[in-house]
Length: 136
Image (tube, rainbow, N blue to C red):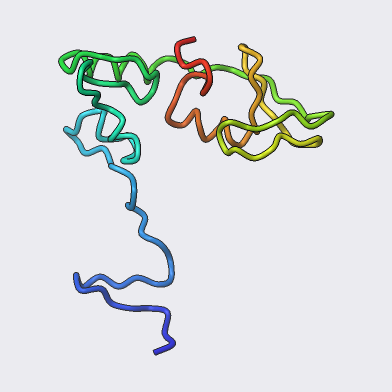
């Protein structure tokens, strides 16, 4: 019918919203740190010849050092940046691939790369470095 509440086969009812757990792993009491990272990062973790690729800093890490590396990486402060409003168009934001236009609020990193402020804020939720200079 036209009712926006519907029952799923598992017996739960849901009203018109989305699933809150989709696409994200949640940290249980004894879960490892890796389980808290977004699922879309997971496929990039493993590379055939170097073991593990850290989704935060992109460095290759031996699998037995993974947990310690995560803790170190996640405890590092993210890069700071200055916000600014563009006075002229400045090319493409490599995060969203849209143009950086006059009047946009941007973030300027210490390496002088610039991005939309909202794009770099989202990027910093899962990374601690510049998208174009991951080893800095």
